[in-house]
Image (cartoon, rainbow, N blue to C red; front, top):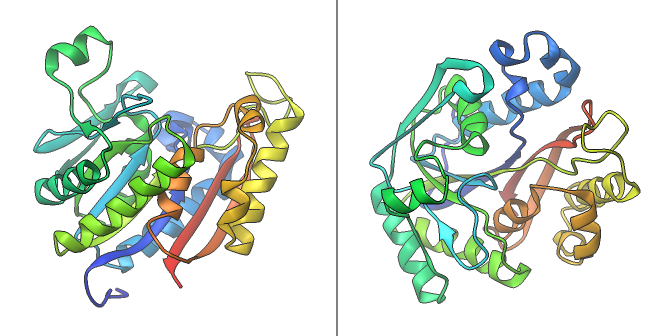
Length: 278
């Protein structure tokens, strides 16, 4: 049943992890070890579909990443496959919302934040892929499975300071209003990659601590816990979801959060949550 959003702007937001192993065609049984995460991704994808958004903005830490530039995919039709994960037949395709993309770029320019795409030559020279990255593809897979057939805008979560990340989130919200869109924002990101001894990257105490602090912030809807986090802790935790999460949290003035799951079955933290305006 659709929860029609009255008006324009960002109607909802979701934190979703992006391990391709969640897809049965890739996991080949291992996805059952992350059953809570898979079920929660289906849950929030269904919630997103219920808002009937016109566009989904997906923020990914695996898009081309810079410390002084927000990369925004620019193809009119955005597509990508899971070929590098052994499943070339699984392809996700969506039309880009070029009007919203332009509105986001204009808002970022107004904040003197450099943003845009890269030329084909530069993409090739820097070793990037023109296709959608798996940080976008995994959430998009669940969204499309749930029936969310919308346009999308895909952008990176740059390696900028917290103040800049918050401004980017605010620009996304303002651009949604500028473009007259009902928008859902998805922050793609895994938590620490060093939570426990199951991790192929090793285990550090900061891994579990980082994930605990993120869950505390979500459970209390208190983003100050997130914003005050020690950057050394974040670095040692080897996370890839913090910047996306800060951007998402700043889309709403006072977000109300609901956490649906957290687990680290492979030593990498996976957290699924929703954000709504208070």
